[in-house]
Image (cartoon, rainbow, N blue to C red):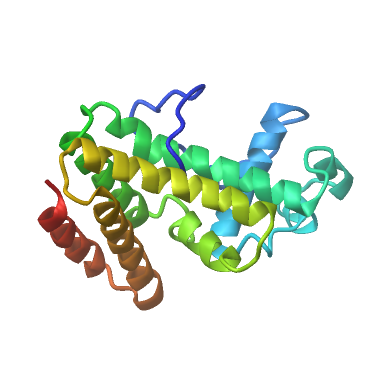
Length: 209
């Protein structure tokens, strides 16, 4: 999550390419990226706590020692997975919205892309950050801090754009937009209610300036 874009180029079609099915292609960055692609997808469905070096090694046909070469501990793997999920979120949601000017147009673009990213299931388990924050919301430590940083940056950007749009209470609007998208995600994941996305869009349209 978050809003950082430095060092990353948005794909031409506005979508980051999920790494499902990719295999490590040797040593170095390619292997690490393939590991993280799979780690993000697994964690979105099964949780960060269930993400282990042994599980990933078996999934990718690697040795545990080979995987340890990239991530020295389970916590290192979890933190790197959050960073990869943030990069995917930025590519899917933030970068396409940067084409719009600050204020109301940017806020609408960010919100549209946010809901679209959840509806398209960019992460196979739904919103990665919704699942991870529920898992770690009462578990202090480095993983919780990294999640708080990522989600906090996203909320701060929504609030900033709401302020530039002249909204009377930018913090409240950011909270409402975030809650509506998470509510749609939860209703779809739990009840299979695809109509939740349309209801969320209608509610959001009534809030945006």
